[in-house]
Amino acid sequence: MTNSSLTQRIEELKREKGAVILAHYYTSPEVQAVADFLGDSLALSVKARDIDAPIILFAGVNFMAETAKVLSPDKKVLLPVPEAGCSLAESCKAEDFAAFKAQYPNHKVVSYVNTSVGVKALTDICCTSTNALQVVESIPREQPIIFAPDRNLGSYIQKLTGRDNMVLWDGACTVHEEFSLEKILELKQEHPEAKIVVHPECRAYIVQVADYVGSTAGILEYCGKSEANEFIVVTEAGILVEMQKRYPEKSFIPAPPMDSTCGCNECRYMKMVTLENILACLEAESPEVVLDEEVRRAAERSIVNMVAIK
Ligand code: 13P
Ligand code: SF4
Image (cartoon, rainbow, N blue to C red; front, side, top):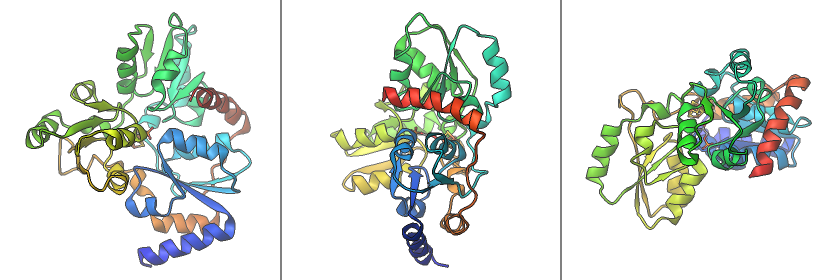
């Protein structure tokens, strides 16, 4: 089937079943095109909670679909590729995290949403890259914190807040850790007027050269507001689709990874979602996200605490 006939069939099935597709900015262009809502992980969590539809199909990775199910237990949440994981979530298994947490009984736990539902159940308050600063600042300064699982986001927040009472889990995103400072600086020499925009999952030495640091939604907003016309984009390359759509008069240069033959400025998990598996999933209404109710309830508290702060 061609992309256009797959798209047409997906649109028909959405109408027939009252299904809504939520997609992250890192999915491929044809997947973004069938989405009813495109967003960053925070916006998609909020949308999943508020949306009035019996079926949500989540075009993204499994922690995002799980978050949607936690917030919307009565809706059917479909995930075309359950194996679409996340290197951050996978670096932090619930049983290992429980043992880590037990070493710090007086600490509050702040977890990035890029975690399994089991880790969220052990968390006091979740955060995303959009609201991590507000979440940490909502906790009294003298209260020690465990921040998991992204050590880069954690140390960036630690630097912004000057808090020395944060213990970091040692996880990282394999996409954002791969950017090359040398190549970014070469690009900057070729495009001296370009602003460097960086996701906080990148290493500290990359964050240091940024004109702007923020989540995918934050970066998009900054590029729109900035007077600059050129941007060196240091995050997953899928976001360029939305950037070029919103700001066709500006130019966006994807930052290359250290090894430019590896394609590793693309998240292989996000790219597992295709029009073919979306169609198959909508037709069969499967695979569906199913969660243990006790774990779901425990996880819900941490996400509701986060959404209340936004
Ligand atoms: P955002 O929260 O910026 O959407 O990022 C999610 C993510 O997976 C980053 O790698
Ligand atoms: Fe996870 Fe990194 Fe992919 Fe985001 S880009 S989903 S953090 S592996």
